[in-house]
Each structure stands twice: as C-alpha cells, then as structure tokens.
Length: 421
Image (cartoon, rainbow, N blue to C red):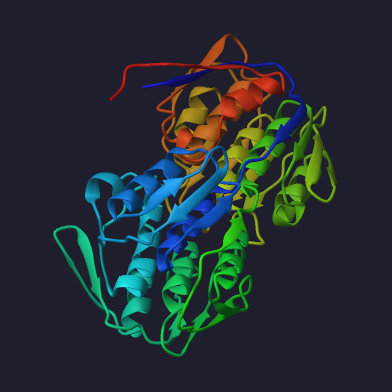
C-alpha cells in the first residue's frame, strides 16, 4: 500500500484551489438515475469514492463520459437494480442509490454499505421513511430488498438529522404521488446543493437548507446541468494546516458561508482569518491558543474537521476539550497522534488535549478518511525526521491530489508507492 512521507517544520505559504465537494458530488451522480440523460455535472473531484459510485452505476447500465472535473451521466439504458457487495462494501454513500432506483424502477437491491469505521451510522432512518412512503422492504443475505409500484407522499420525521437519509428520501420523493414533508431534516450545504440540482431537473422542493423540507411530487423530470459546490472539508483542512504551520495561505474557490464555525475557532487560536467572496486567507499565529470544540450538525463545527483541529490543539498553549456529538467512535485517530507525542485523554465522547511545544516524527497508521488528514497535518510540524502515514487509501477517498497541493504550498511531502493489496 502507498504511504505519505512528510518532513515537518516548513510553514505553508501560497495559494491553493479547493476541489468540488465529494459529499455533494456523490448524491448528484446518484440523482442522475432518476431520469435518462445526458446530465452534465461540473466540479466533480477525481476521488476513489467517485470511481466507486461510477463503477456501481455502470453495472446498472449508466454511461459516463467527460474529462477533468466535467462528467456527463446518461442512464437512458438503466437495465439493473442491484448494487453488489464487492463495490458497496467500500463506500457507505452507496446507500444513496436506494431512493433513486426505487423511484425510477420500483425496485432496488442494495448491499448493506461499508465505509469508514467511525460509528454505526445505521440506515434504519432511510428504511423507515421509505416504508412510510409505501415501500415493501426486507433484509436478507446482507442486502436491502425494496419494492414499490409507486411511492406516495408521507410525513417523515427523522429521529436524528441524517445527511444521507435526507438526501435519499428527497430523491425518492421528487416523483412520488402527493407531498412529502421531511421534519428534523439535515440542513448541511450538500443538502441544498442536491435540492438545487433536483429543481433544475424539474422537481418541486421547498425548504432545503432548513430542518423542514417539503417535496411536491412531479410526473416527469428532465436531465440538467449542475455545478457542484466547493468542498468545505478540504478547504477547512487547508485552513487548519495554515494555522498549524504558522503559515500564510489563500484558500481559493471555497464558500466562506459554509465555514463560519471554523473561522471563528481559528480566530480564537490567534490566527488571522480574512474572508472574501470565494476565498479565505489564513495567517497562522506565532503562539497558538487553546480553544474548546463541540461538534454539531451544520452550521455548527463539522465533525469532519474535528480530527484535523485536534492536530492543531496538540501544539497549542494550555488545555482544550473536544466533545464529539455526531459519531460515537470518532476519536480513533487519538492513538496515532499519541505516537507523535500528543498528550490526549479520552473519556467517552470527550477528549482532553494538553498542548505541547512540539511533536516528534514517527510512523503512524490512518484509520479513516479524516484521521488520515489529521495525521498529515501533525506530520507537517513534527520534528526529528520524517513522519510516515500508512494506509492512505482512506485519504484517496476524499482528498484530490492532496500531497501535490501541500507540496505547492512549500510542504516537504511525497507519496511512496507500495505493493498493492
């Protein structure tokens, strides 16, 4: 397997361009199943997860064309409704195919999904909502089998806000008979982005971006053109890296309104943060102040930035407390940060970080996507030789060309090829 090797101690300086958001691109690609094409999607990042969903949909009969960040998707010849285990097991977002397939074909067979080991993230909320819309669903041999001659509008209440659940049911509801109301819906920017694409296809959706979304079913949809929003988590990762390395970085092609919570926390550390229309400038402080973090659904502090911010706090002055409220197992990066010398104690969903003057290089192993990023950030300031980050296949699921982007900012970082597994 490949590894990333980092020689720490080099402040990041320069300009970095943010790629399109993985978590917006995946549901947008899935939405192309709702009607034949050609759909044109722009801003698609070149990521492992994108390749995975394309491979699954190709097995269903979808045809993909395009180059760079432009993708043409045509599901005119949708011939199958089964998403197989050998592909679905690698990516939890595969569950997003359930709603569109059920809406278009009246049946879907999806393997129970896999992905990062950061918590159970049960899909029962998706299934409960589809049942309320008239679907017949049963689980057998590791697969979700769903059938519905015609989905019907329903009043759906999510016990907890769920991003993929909101997206899945929103896609299922756009051609259902009657009106579907989603209550306690997720309001992340990726939800609003998907709603804008669906409306461009002819859907009738109100309230996306709030906790109550109303979908009036329509008879027909048409292919559309849509540009994916910038990846707020990638942008946030570079913002934190700039502060951590005492750097001076312009993060361009991002949406500052999607990163308000992080900007506030970075300013509290002493970093200079300046926002413009589509960019954010971060200048790191000479002395990093400790701040507390509590992860929350948007617009709160994103759980997907918790691990990266913890890397920042390992070299801050004083103590900081992290409270993880979204996923129950999202401190699995802590043991690897400790290998670099971090002083962190865990008690349930809380982690207490005592900042140290420096981290020391060591070989570490990535355990999930965002943990991979946190270890790279820690490696950027670790002293005493090179830090090796192993099992970086997680990283390739969510960051496009990250080592080259860091290298362009002055980081001493490289990828070393290893034997395939």
